[in-house]
Image (cartoon, rainbow, N blue to C red; front, side, top):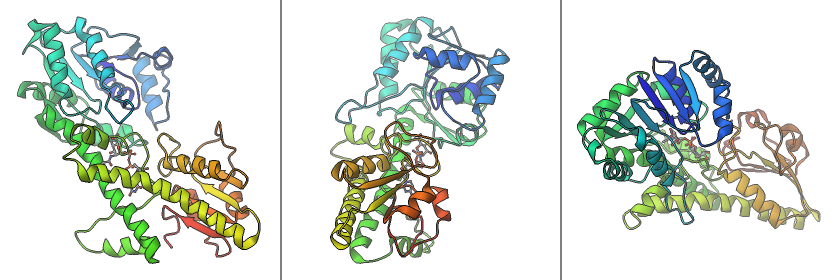
Length: 401
Ligand code: SAJ
């Protein structure tokens, strides 16, 4: 069987490599010539444990080859980005142009799968596009939507073992896609229609965003109430049917912080809670920066000098190097802009250097600073002794005190 993956990014490349390792002859396609070149030399352009070795094997065995454009295949899997235009309006133009590039190759019996996170109704729109351009293919090809749900850093394992939801434009399309994924998915496969599968992906991430917003709102209430939010949540979670998540310095990444907007932009009136949760999680990062600035002001009034401030963490979540959409990065830039004559020590144990910020070792920063703001709960920070002689702003539960 031949499969053509359009888009060799964080999801497309690992899925293409895994498919190539399970008896499928795989073509990888990317508009970025650097990516085409690196894949064909068995290299990957981002870090994902175990993936580069698998890519090297797939390429050297001739099962995976990358090109700038599609090659004739039996299945075409579209895994391109779906970014946003200005005001959180989803942009599906990459998906549309991927469909247009495969049009000349589509023949009777072919399978087309969209994996990109999309607004509800996108798969049906792509069906209209295909059948308006090639009416002879109507009801002659299979078209399905199948989102991924992997956790960055554990992608290979989860692509194979996580359950998958497949939404077909008709029953046969879902079944055809199921037989494709059965080549390498060991998790259970659940079939439904395209619209349900599209909203399912958005629902998973929006539900997590709402749950995190609840925890963040609790943390702001507890600050005012003089209650330790970490203790509060731990006690509330003793209830057999309560599971409150952890407050943080905001919500980052290119999934949880983004996917809810696919819902609020299409259902602005109906999605009140989902929209509000986004506001609360964005506000939490602002609240943290204000808290740091007011603590610095109090220090100056009391001590008659500017404090040394350690800002602990830049990545969007603990123990990774990914800074995309990171609330910690937002807080660092906001605090430094507002107070450019204080002495800031910036810490990120998961990267060697940063193009804008000079980085300090976390132990040294903790030792030197008067004020220590924990923005990301990296494992390294949990080895630090709690110090009463420092002002500690623990936004993400490093000490849980
Ligand atoms: N966060 C909190 N408190 C928590 C949990 C997370 O503040 O209790 C913050 C994190 O610090 C981070 C953000 O939320 O800034 C998102 O972190 P995450 O681990 O929840 O999400 P991602 O973006 O790494 O991965 C999510 C996962 N979705 C769900 O857990 C429902 C993953 O399964 C998805 O596949 C992925 O989004 C995606 O690609 O959509």
